[in-house]
Image 1 (spheres, rainbow, N blue to C red):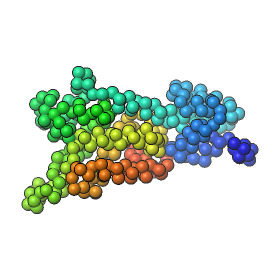
Image 2: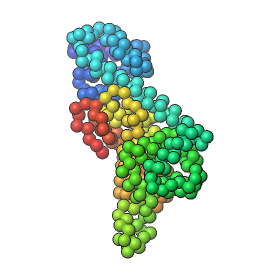
Image 3: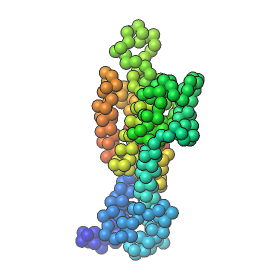
Image 4: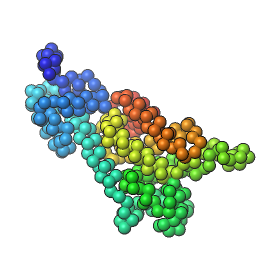
Length: 306
């Protein structure tokens, strides 16, 4: 605390000013602002972390007044602080929204839930009618049995939301992954069969089950705070469910490639491959300039895609 006082006297700037002026917009700046606010002994600064988004602007005005900073001579500071605080409270709200979806169980009596499930089938099997709600056909898109609701127990509606978003918004990739996943591993196919069927991308995993597992991975990255690096770099202001779902799509594609690279002998190696993939993503997210899928750039940084 004494050091902060000395630095402020020497530079003429408080800690929040120094952070904003010395760091570009994105994770580098927002993570430092978040830390500064969290460990402040001032209640106003601490409360900024959980303020309602509609009250962020007023909160920043109050902080500027508390720090005796003239907004007319420091206009960019107010804008920078507001953008970072919106990211912080937005991330907090996103965690709550994702958690709510995860906790909501799939209900076959709920017409909205059933409609989403039917849409998923139509997106992934557009030319194949479903014989019935309870059917072994669900295994064709990677569910374990004749009723998909049992597979959603771990991730609730979040798993279904993510799978449907992937199938609708990145359809070509989703269909290619599904097609690959239905092929047998090459070591169980004779060379003539291999050449005839051109199974160069054979995978041999259950598409929907992998999607639910990758949903769990994305969820764990979110609630642990590891995704802050990525989301603070891609969401100009408030991270939302759309950003989370785009991240899920990216993780699905990357896991698909990673599974091929690892070339596991069978599906029994799934947990090993998934854990290794998880560690790889965590390492990448330790870079404060990292954006896993920079569809939306938060600054003029040239964000690197994995």
